Length: 361
Image (cartoon, rainbow, N blue to C red; front, side, top):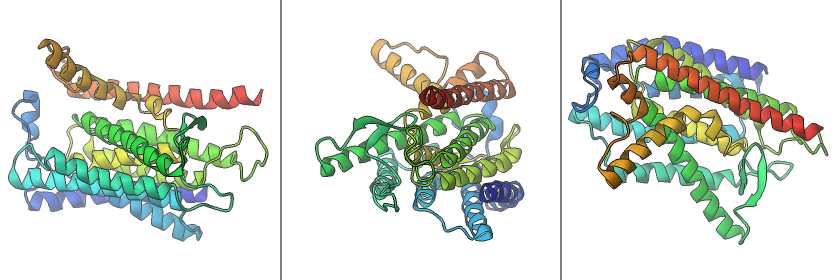
C-alpha cells in the first residue's frame, strides 16, 4: 500500500508543478492547438492554446512508478511495465500526430494509415509479450480467455496455441483501439476526458488492491480468488496515472491553459486497455468506461445514419458537441458528463463487488 500512495503522490506533484513549466516551453516555441473551422464557433477562441500536454501525464506516470519502486525497494513487475509500455507507445504515436498538426498548422496530422500502423505495432508488441513471462504460479500477465470480472470459459486458444495467440492479438487490438479512440473522441472540451479518466483509473486502483488482497497466491484453493499475475503492481500503475491526471486537470480545466492532445488521449486509452486486459476485466471496462462508450457510439450512429439515410441524428458528433450546439455551456456539459462517468464507474464497481458477494454465498 505504501508503494501505491507514493506513486499517486509523486505523479500528482510532478504533473501539478511540471505542467506550467511545459506550458512555458510550448508557448515559447509557438506550439499551439489548431482549431477546425467546421467545429463549434465557441472553440475558435482556443486557437493557439498549447497542446501535447499528454507528454506531462506520461512523464509524471513513469517518474512516479520508478520513484515508488525505488523508495520501497520493490522490483517492478512485467505486468506494470507492459501497461506503461502500451501507454508510452501509443502516446508517442499521438505525439507524432500532434506535432505534425502544429508544425503544418492543419487539422490533419498523421495520415489514417500511418497512424493505424503505429498503433498496431505497439498493440501487437504488447499483446504478444503479455502472453509470455510466466511467474512462479505459471501465470502470464494476460490470458487467452476472454474475461468479464475474471476469466470466462471462452478460450481463444480452443483451436491450438498458435491460433490462440493470433486470436488474442486481434482481440487485444480491438480493445486497445476502442479505448484509445474512445478517449480521443471524448477529448473535445476542457477537462472532459481528463476528469472522466480520473474516475476510471480510480476504479482500477480499487480493483487492483482488491484483487491483490484476494489473490490466488495468497488464498490458495479459494474458488473466489483472482488469477491475476501482478494485481498490486497494476494498482500502482493506476495510482501513477490517476495522480498525473489529477495534477494535469488543474491546468486543463476550463478555461484550459493546455490540452492533452492525441498524445494524452491515446496514452490514457492505452493505459486503460492494458489495465483491463491484465486485470482480467476486459468486458467490465464497457461499464467502467461507459462515458467513452457512449461518446464513441454517438459518432458511429451519426456516421451510419448519414451514410444510410442522408440524415444526421445529432446536431454534431461526438455527443458533447451536440449539446454545445443546443445551447448548453461548456462547463455545464463537462460537469454533467463527469457525473455520468462517475455513475458508470459506480455501476461497474457495483457489478464487480456483487460478483464476489454472490460467489461467496
